[in-house]
Length: 145
View (tube, rainbow, N blue to C red):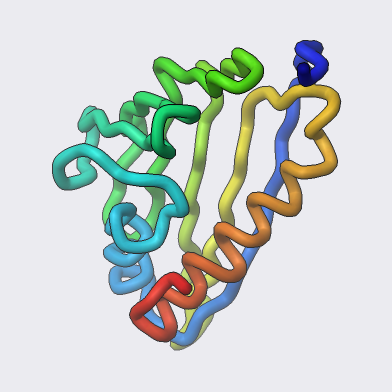
């Protein structure tokens, strides 16, 4: 059984892509095509709700709390559970901020919430793979993997 002690965690990762902010933003909000878990929901917009899940072991319900096309999208997890160890990250915020850089866009992703103390080292690894590989490949190549 995993250690159940929680730790506040904030992690930020940035990527720069050769596309304008509006195009990058549209890729970011197309979660069903690049996020590593199953996406259940409608089009992402302010106050929309959606679910991420992985088979029967991982579930999170999320609500979009910031939405400015070409600039920022953020959601907060309103319900969550990983059944294997009862890990709950409810209240965690996921923030995508876009800044133009000439013909490029700097995309800054921030995870702001909690992790299990025993998994704090994995947070950077998971965020880096999700943003630097999956999202980057979806934006630049049109496919996440």
